[in-house]
Amino acid sequence: DGGITQSPKYLFRKEGQNVTLSCEQNLNHDAMYWYRQDPGQGLRLIYYSQIVNDFQKGDIAEGYSVSREKKESFPLTVTSAQKNPTAFYLCASSLRTANTGELFFGEGSRLTVL
Amino acid sequence: DQQVKQNSPSLSVQEGRISILNCDYTNSMFDYFLWYKKYPAEGPTFLISISSIKDKNEDGRFTVFLNKSAKHLSLHIVPSQPGDSAVYFCAARFSGAGSYQLTFGKGTKLSVIP
Image (tube, rainbow over all chains, first blue to last red; front, side, top):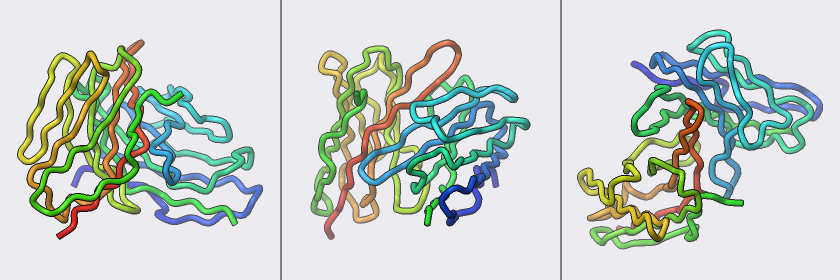
């Protein structure tokens, strides 16, 4: 089945540690996105990538880094510089020229900093 | 500054009645508006969208209305069913420089009471 796979679903991290969240898609989509959801905050854009080897900062990129070495993969690293990393992270993808702007989301990864 | 606002954090409706979820936006450059449905600990799923050049789009029990002069859109669910209980996010698409970004509202939690 085509879709977006995020792993791990749950992750615990000690303060000061970097952690990488995986996102893989087999939809042949050009664009990929990372969003963060906090209670009562909706979804906020962290980073996005329209093509391989290119990505742009979203609204809340500080403390995060990404790479896009392959079309299928868009991992997100939460660094120790992120002051409040505990959140639900969502990866999404879309056709670059999607007429409707529809994003397809993964199941999410919940990160908890201990 | 929030560009997409969902002013009602929650809404309760009796099964079989109409659910109306509202959304306001400030950016007149948005060209597409979308509604997503989200269950706890899952990724959002696309529900329905509308182009900024239209004022209504219907898909089964779901209808989205767009009032551009008021910068307001609404999602109508008729009849409401218990399975519709979820958080609904309004999103608006901005297209620029060959990229597409979605800006999300904070969501409205709909509870359909049997």
